[in-house]
Amino acid sequence: MECERCGSCCLQIHGIINISEADIRKWVNDDRVDILQYCEGWNTDMFLWDRDELIRYLNEGISMEMWFDPKSGDEVSLCPFLKHSKKEFECTIQDTKPEICRKYFCDTKDMKKIIKRSFEENLKEYRKRREVLSFV
Image 1 (cartoon, helix red, strand yellow):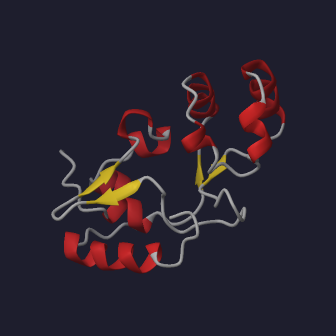
Image 2: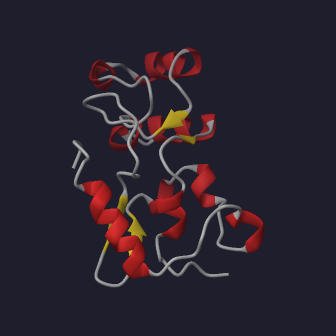
């Protein structure tokens, strides 16, 4: 199946998602601090660390969970990389999104508790959640 970009999966899988060690390593190697900062346990001092020090820390201490507000450390209810245009949602980190997202497809096997909703319904929910986020 091809993604319709309706946003149902991204908006209904709330809050914390588990990420793989491979995701973290890739983001470190690609200098994707824009993504890493949303991992639980990340802090701004890490921007100054060298790559080896950072990988050592990631192996020992950073959580394999995200999305957390980089300013407050609180869990957020919306992926910071989900954006919308007039007719569809898009992932702004499509090329390097978390493995759990890459493996998700809108079919009956994967959908579990996800209810396919229209773009318009999802857009209302998206706007409501964005209003309360501090990282926007």
